[in-house]
Length: 214
Image 1 (tube, rainbow, N blue to C red):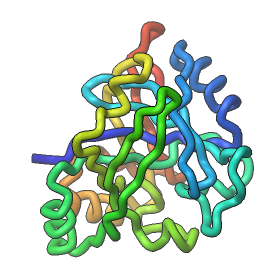
Image 2: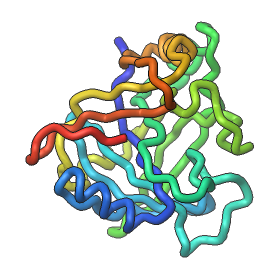
Image 3: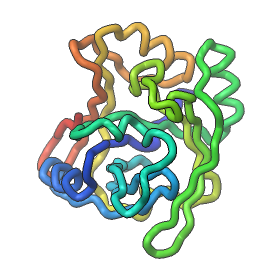
Image 4: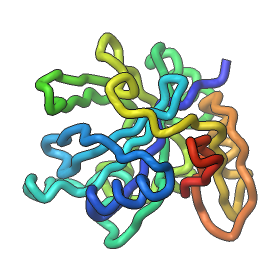
């Protein structure tokens, strides 16, 4: 069975400005999630139905600069865009091994965590490609999702306001075959369209109708 979307990630240079943009598009304001200690970032969230959510992430001015590049290309100035996404992998070791056997290495499985404003500690494990540490661009130009497993932690979508329903997700790339091959290795089934620019596009049904987030 193809892996399901866990969350989509919108990057920005400043969190409140990003929340303003998302609110203008979806009609609902994202709620603050928390800080990522050591990562130099913080986030805000909106639920998108079916145990999926939107993560808005930006550099955190309250933290010192991390000793490695921030995730998802956040050190590049001025970008507001849907950058990448994550898929659910409750059987993490099995999924990673299967992808490697098909020719794609999702990366090392690492532990992550943050504390919500109400004091609840969230913990997860996810895959991290070496490019996430070096700052280089990974295979698939960030259009390939990473894997995540929340274990016994309450899923973040349960505490976030409803921003709509994620109807579909597709990628655009000048060389779509490259991305398609990696997605097949991961057993991820989304449309990959040929286009002049690299991008991730989410169609979200809102109270104001269907909108696209890029």
